[in-house]
Length: 189
Image (tube, rainbow, N blue to C red; front, side):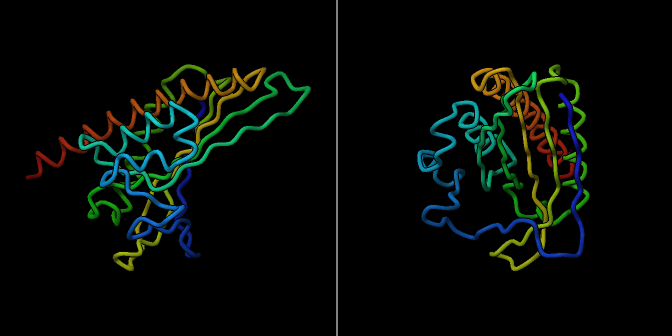
């Protein structure tokens, strides 16, 4: 898998706003309310994304999802004419880490390393970004991880299938990193 790492720490406005509470038609806290996944249309329509969101927001994970979306694109005439992609914004479920730039940079670098080991360099691409963000509840600037994954194929169905396989690899890598963070926390205590 091709992976691009982006670190966005410019002095401009925050790249993402993290709401304090659930908002109708917007942010839903899947850790507090797992059944709210039914309110997220991309999760209802795409089982791989649903599985990723459930895993990210599970009790065994140190992460929480903030937002997600999917899209499809076609470029007739090219060998890989179809593309299917997703974006998932992720934070740590424990607030403390959300304000530590170095923790997010380490996480992004570890994720890039794990994803680059996966096959499919010609049909799968990922972008792992660390964004500055505003946390409404604390009125502080912190960080979030934005994960973009794209699958390419000759047909829309093939592109979505490849994307789904990439989501499975992404989920596995994030859960591996979650266990590593938990182990580090246990050793520190």
